[in-house]
Amino acid sequence: MTENGPVPLHTPLGLLAELTHRCPLGCPYCSNPLALDPRQSELDAPTWARVFGEAAALGVLHVHLSGGEPGARRDLVAITASAHAAGLYTNLITSAVGIATATLDKLADAGLDHVQISIQDSEPQSADHIAGYEGAFARKRALAADVVRLKLPLTINAVMHRANIDRIENMVDLALSLGASRVEIAHVQYYGWALKNRAMLMPSAEQVERAAKTVEELRRRHHGEIVIDAIVPDYFARLPKPCVGGWGRRSLNVTPAGKVLPCHAAESIPGLEFWSVREHSLMDIWANSPAFNAFRGTDWMKEPCRSCARRDIDFGGCRCQAFALTGDARATDPVCHLAPSHGDIVALAAVREDAPYVYRRM
Amino acid sequence: MNDPTPTIAPDARPRLPRGVRLVHNEAQGGWVVLAPERVFKADAIAVEIVKRCTGEATLAAIVDDLAKTFNAPRERILADVTTLLRGLADKKLLEL
Image 1 (tube, rainbow over the protein chains, first blue to last red):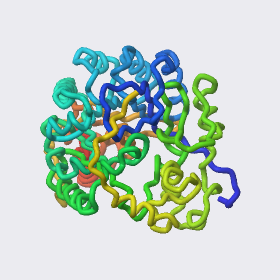
Image 2 (cartoon, rainbow over the protein chains, first blue to last red; image 1 turned 30 degrees about the vertical axis):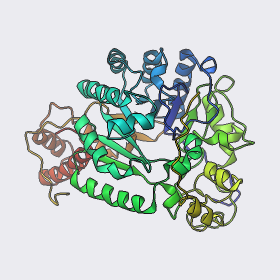
Image 3 (tube, one colour; image 1 turned 135 degrees about the horizontal axis):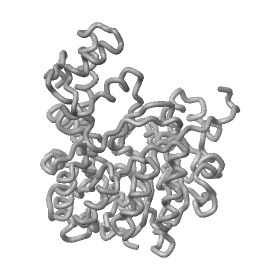
Image 4 (cartoon, chains in turn green, yellow; image 1 turned 135 degrees about the vertical axis):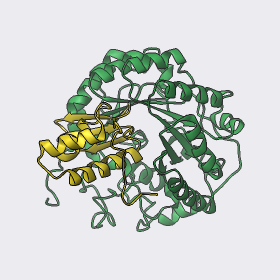
């Protein structure tokens, strides 16, 4: 392909459907934006059904029913049934608080394929403190049991940070005891509320190093028993993550109000024009919306990305992180050791503060 | 750890668990296995094997059927099938 040739349009694989921003929990690392969509702006179920049909026609395979807490939607069963009817693989991403046993039974009947439950810690008291919600941990255990009873595959999503990173082994043991077939050891990514709480969440370099060794050891120990996926804390990395598999290449995110974003944090970049499913079809948005085309291909890149051998591997890293830390969304993600601002991220990774969390609230 | 020469009992009845599906998708260019947070492109050989993992046929019957259908030596089919199925089972994408 020539340097200035047309950027090929890829087929997206996944759609993150943020059904609502409402959530009973207040996790200080929530990936939702600081400005949350209010209930009255949420898309209705028939609109979601249309979006799922358009997504399937576009080639999307997985739909992730997320939020906020998707259980806050009273029409969750109808929404799930419409995603299944469109032929999509349906994944429910839940805190477990707000999904009653009877609702889960109905979701399973509606064609739900997989459930992911977040766990804040293996210690109940600490878990409830991090979630900002008393009794959350007990509810998670109960819903996990229901998922297993229905023979639905279960993933436990364990978000790691300074307060719980030393308990990775306990988290994996907990996931095994709950009957999960997969566990995500997902270090906090510093966007949205997590960026606000960064100094309170940041682990030490020693903790991160120990965590990586622990994950390797646990993978060996539990081979064939449970799949352990790990998301590394990128402030301690030398190479940036290929964020969302490349901008506008593999996934779309629909906000509760219907805006379509290339990733869940994209609204943090000023000047991008997002289109809404209320005015455009998903195909039109995927192909033509200015926000999706802003960072497709490599023509937008600056040096050192522009001439880098890895530019088609990691795509210059994350645009939102580049903007958040340098003020320029076209800059190299500062995680990259070749980025002019790499020293800034090394310095930020060393800033820790023991102050109370700023909980996520509407 | 990975056993260098994996074996599966001949009377095992492999099947895809709930939440794992083999589907054909034109836009994605063919057959894919859909699983939690994962998508695997399935080549022609994998499709023929996975299609037969219904929970009813035994491993021995699946291998016999493939050897007959594709007129290939049974030992080689058995080795290919065992490697593929063991790999899927280790990833929790297959029940044996």
